[in-house]
Length: 261
Ligand code: PEP
Image 1 (cartoon, helix red, strand yellow):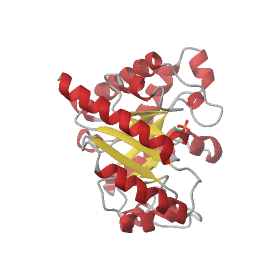
Image 2 (cartoon, protein in one colour):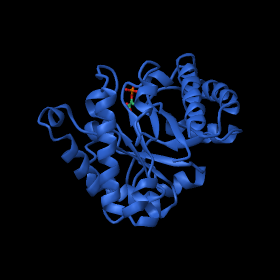
Image 3 (cartoon, protein in one colour):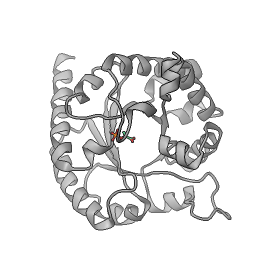
């Protein structure tokens, strides 16, 4: 895969003003980065329009969620047509907090993924096993089920627009436990196998990103995995003083990999 994807979801953090300060600085950083590093940020809905107006780099802008209907009586929801009007580059679907606090399930996600693809908004689909599933030794089965339900009905052509974020639920956010890189590489290989089983050789083109307590100490170890095509970072990316050194390390990693090829 030509690109290494690196992005962050701000969750319910940063006002418009705070977001603009961050974004202006990140754009400056991005201008000097290797073009193989594809940066993206996923702010709250309120920041999407102001940030979109300021884009002056190749950073992609994504939304944190989306309803599957184009319009209707769904108070508090935002539709694909509304996101399309803003011109977002992607939409994150199925973050574990959406699943945990808003009862989203894989069937809902399947409808959202279908809708995003219909509107040409590439979905970043989050999947991940719970700690109980890991302890019972059924992480792979859990990931297979999530992929097979979420991506049901997606065509080979459409899947080229899909990105997967593998985020073990037990590894993300405050209190998350860092996964070993060996475990992450094994799960990414499994996800790749399922994608190839479902979509044939095209399954090899779907970027699989890892997220969950990524920080400067573990980022490059995770990226060493053959099927780890990027990183999806929360807390370590919200402060640019922490994020910039991680981006520098990733850039060195990309450049060394190019030399080794
Ligand atoms: C997340 O919640 O999706 C996430 C990756 O967060 P963190 O990096 O803070 O664990």
